[in-house]
Length: 470
Image 1: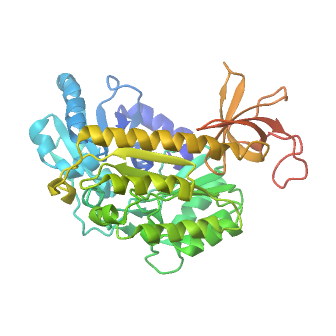
Image 2: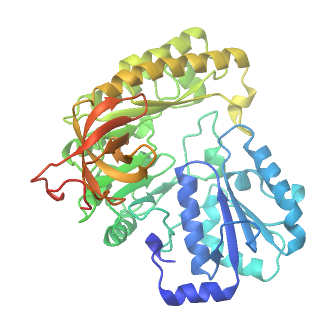
Image 3: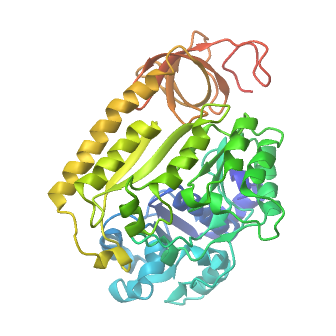
């Protein structure tokens, strides 16, 4: 299947006749989800056909994530469920972060698994598939941190025909003391700006209007040829004909530069939303986390964002109960909610991850204290978020249509600030998925907005009749 999910009839017939089928199950973040899109596209290009159930598949793949607590245990539990199928001639593969972390131990614990590959080795999938088809029983793709290669492919099977992802940087060099990503995804390695822009241009030509740039630390991007900065890449993609929105995630405060804010201010197509994980409001805890910035450093970047000529929505990640976190440290984190004014906070209790420095730290926070702090943080943010969302009441927002809630008689969309907007329209025909229109906000909730479609004539790129496909 070609990028964008558009294949030709000849390919489809070949796939159907080949008898090679696969099923893939994906866990984790947007990076993992997009990795699976690229894996699916690669498999289909190699003559495999995707099926919807394990029972119908000859090859079963499990794309794993090890960010959450006890992730590897969940992987082996899932593999144990597959064990009953091993006598049916099926082949099994484990991909992703847990594959890289556990390596050959997967073969020992689940000997019916034939393929183990970390994400840094996906570029070798065609060759590994040939070996798998030849009957090899233990095939590994486990790159160390020395690899300079990225997984670039024109055969991405995109799941959404209007919004698509582009990974511009893989790996991580930050080595936060709680995180396994530098070990499971390798060192930071960026694609050339030319290859990124070429992929974005192909997507625009295929009808994609919303492009999201991905990376463990997306703004740590460094063009290997030195041609463009991250901010310049944002501007260049936004300038492509047909592109309406450009997003990026996840940013790292250490590499967040002022020119990114200037690009958002200058270019309407670059979405007015920045996800900038802080993890803690305490400089002492940040130092223990090895985040390589202080509270003051982080707030300086927040000040840049607040001073922008265009309002920019801010969201963040927070870890509660990191080893050594005192009540005073936690109070500094709570204070960020008022100082910054986040539109959303994704908060988690600290959980130790294998092979990370934080495992050996003393002064662990008791689980009941950790849980209580997390609850306090979430409740405090919920109240502030309700107020924050109320600022949109009366505003007219551009919305991209994503779905329909027929039970409520509402259309669901998303604003450029990445907020969910549920709205109604008086038009007899519902707007098409992926179309853009304008909504006047009439109500606000802590996690969504409600409104009514309005007609905005004389807006470039929108039909005068309102919510129709642009």
